[in-house]
Image (cartoon, rainbow, N blue to C red; front, side):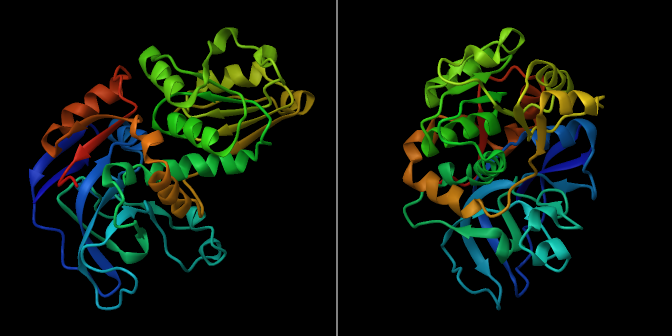
Length: 336
């Protein structure tokens, strides 16, 4: 089968490899329909931060059809449409037993701890497959994992319905957060991104107002001051600017970046700033799958380029440069 494998930092190759193995008793093999390229895929490619085995087939966002089922699997049958859970967790540690598998003491991710979905087939634990409805559009279902991340971030921020929200970054998580916010509430929404094309597309999809962070003021909202911010960039300079500009504010951090940030705790105290780390997702994936099914037309516009497995290496370079106008690039493997 064809597969895109990360061999080392900056070394990604599309290759012919053996077909994903027959499933063990608690596993399924999925014929991949679509797979999404995530910012964390690009981060791992550029930095090697999460390379734990190599080479490894990349990709943790995917949808497809169940092609083979292990002997002990219940609830999934050959031909079922599924979306992926990216979290490779132990189920046994204290956090897993409490249902907080995203905080598993030995947490890894599909595409890193085990082979991922940038391939014709993938074999995974059955617990990592969420069944979709028979009429689900699989290119939309491939957005389930990043939408779950967006929903988790919004849940952690716990924003009252009538409070404005500022989202920094209009990549996949930023755009999906904006769309999820509009599906859940009628709050005022502000967005910003250095990529003007992506910002305009996100505004068009969500009805948000585009702002310039450098000149933005909390009082720019006509109704209430902005007290909630979600940073999806992970950019140290952006986060530092937010800390200097905001007061009486909760700032959610969901972006993956690099570098160190010096924070004066007295500044946080005096300006009553709360910083909330938002990691992966908890139990939001079923909600994401349902939302994508019910409001497929709303989320269609997030998808930009559709590429082949063979084009993935080149696409990584474009996305890593920050110049891609697409919000989400999908790899069309077998399609619908």
